[in-house]
Image 1 (cartoon, rainbow, N blue to C red):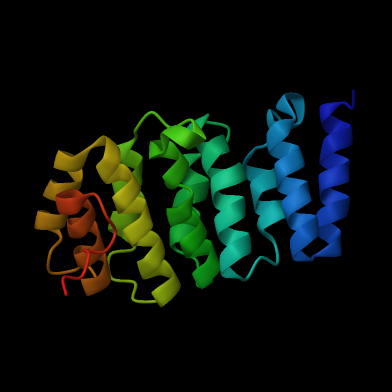
Image 2 (cartoon, one colour):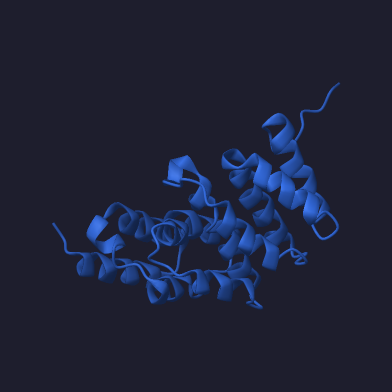
Length: 184
């Protein structure tokens, strides 16, 4: 079996290629190797995020590596906070996407409304569509674990939240669905 360091070298080599299939293999390999995953830290997540500038890459990386490592306290709150202040829309989206594993049972989350809302609070006024969609996702996932906390956040921040976020999160809270079913 390969050592954690060997897997990290393999992951770096795949990420150097820069195409989507190589990214998928890199992150899934890293996520599946316990010893290698234990090496994930602030510096490594920043290194692996370099050059990511599309929706699928950010989301896969965010839920497979960054969010899980943050949930396990291998990545700091300070790293996530720094991404919320980035001029790069993809880093801001990545900070929000990384909250999903904090709350998703399928990703090992036990519920962390506090850290989720901390990230959302910083990005309340961001109207970049990629950020708005990620905030909706983050809050919808948190609502599964802490509906009262998310409801209180919606009420308090009503005037600052993007209409899409309010609509989709309220629908999730009321119907369990992102979008209400249309009646004919």
